[in-house]
Image (cartoon, rainbow, N blue to C red):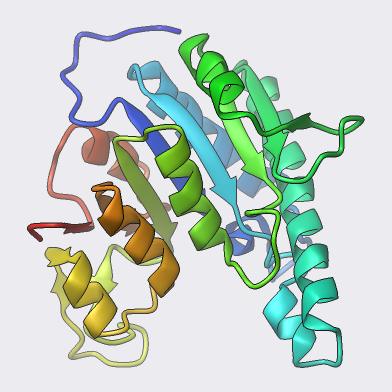
Length: 245
């Protein structure tokens, strides 16, 4: 891995990305090559700074279990379908990363050895130490848990310095900024405040896991090309959720 002399605040990061950022509503593609290339370039730049990078992707561009339950799909079956969708996205990102010259591995919560490695924490840490980006597919491997919870869990298991929650807006707001022009962005929050106010940027289980394991969360705009580098350098980017706020 190429190292730089830049001082970093976070050296091992878990990046959480929604599946929706991979799709293109205009073209109808659930996996847009341009979006994948952009995502791969962002991860490449992060790794080039000297960061060890783990990634968890959602599957909402293909299938979302909770939405399926509203259309008559059994919740457990729907969640299993959603977890498989995250594996498809993980393989797509791995391919895009390798095309960009970045070594990457996919590890899954449910064994599917012909497709990807089973998740073993020690093996994941070895991959990170050897300079590979590790993409964690399959959610937690259990129904009724979101990929936000999976991201928090994997951040704990690999000992990440921070969980980076990528969104389409530049942080956490008091209300939806697209609907409420008076919505204000929080610069920082405590875990407790996020839980008490039921802020929907992540689910309660994910917030609680990060709180209990003292892993800060930074919510930022993934489409700001310089945001990731700013976050790991310790700049005031997006919204920081931590014990002290």
